Length: 343
Ligand code: FPP
Ligand code: MG
Image 1 (tube, rainbow, N blue to C red):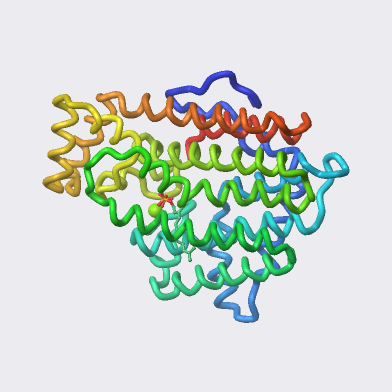
Image 2: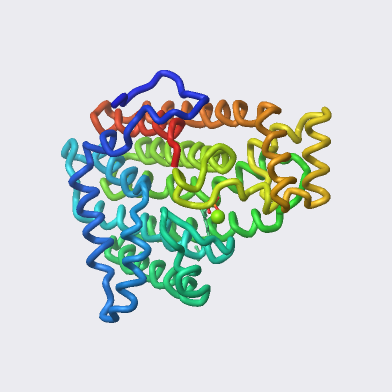
C-alpha cells in the first residue's frame, strides 16, 4: 500500500487501499458499524430488513472516518476518543445515507453501493419514509451530544443538502458556464457535511478556534474535491466498480466539471457538445456516446483531475495549524487517496 503520493495519477489507477489507510481508526469504525447495524433496529422486522438493505450494502464510510480522525487529531489527551465522538461519526453517516436514499428517489436510480435501491426494490414512498427515519435517528444522536453550536451546524447542513439538490435540478440543461455556481452546488451537496463533521469533532474536544477553523476549511476543501472526483467518475467509471449507474449526468443534463471545461471554450468541440445538449440528443445512447467522447477528447478529464488536485492541495494546506500526529498524517493522506479513488 502507498499511504502517501506526491502526485495523483490522471489515469486513476487506485494505488492506495482505503482500508489500510484508515487503519489508525479501524476499531473506532468497527464501533460505528455496530451502531449502524444494531442500534437502529426497530421493533418492526420489516423496518429492520429495510435498514439492513441500506447499511449492509456497505459504503466507504469516509465521513465517519473524517470525524474520528479529526477527533483523535485534536484530543486534549493526544490520540484519545470519547463516546460522544463516536455518536458524532454515526450521525454524520446517518445523514449522508438518508440523503442518498432520497437522492435515489429523485434520480429514479436502481443501483447503489452495488445493491438494488430501496425505491427500486420496494417503492418511492417507502424510500422517502426510510430516509426520513434515518434523519430522525440522526436527530436523536444529535440530541445526545447536548451541544447547541453543533445542532446549528448540522441544521445548516440539512438545509445545504436540500439547497444543493434544488440548485442541481434548476440547472439541468442550463449551458451557461458558471464555475461559482458549480462549486457552490458541490459545497451544498457534499462539502458542507464534510466540514461539519471535521469542525464538530474539534468543537466536542473544546479546541481553540484555530483548530476548528482549520478542520472546517480542510473538510470544505476535501468535500469539494470529493464531489469533483465523483463527477469525474461518472465519465470515467463503470457501474461495476462504482456500485451505482455511471455515465448518467450528461444524459440528465447535469453539467459538471468535465463538460464545463469543454463548454467554456469557443471551439468546434464546444459547439458540438452544446448542440447535443440543446437538442437533448444526449438523452439517446448514441448522442450520449458522442458527448462523452467530445468531453474526453477535448481534455475535460485531465482538466478535471487537475482541478480536483488543486482542492486536495488546499485541504492539505488547511491542516498546517494542527499539531503533527498519526491522525493528522492520515487526514493528509486521505486527500491523496481521493484523487486515486475508483468508486
Ligand atoms: C448524491 O450526489 C447526493 C447528495 C450528495 C445529496 C442529496 C441530497 C438530498 C436528496 C436532499 C436530502 C434531504 C434532506 C431532508 C436533508 P450525486 O447525485 O452527485 O451522486 P450519485 O451519483 O451518487 O447519486
Ligand atoms: Mg444522484
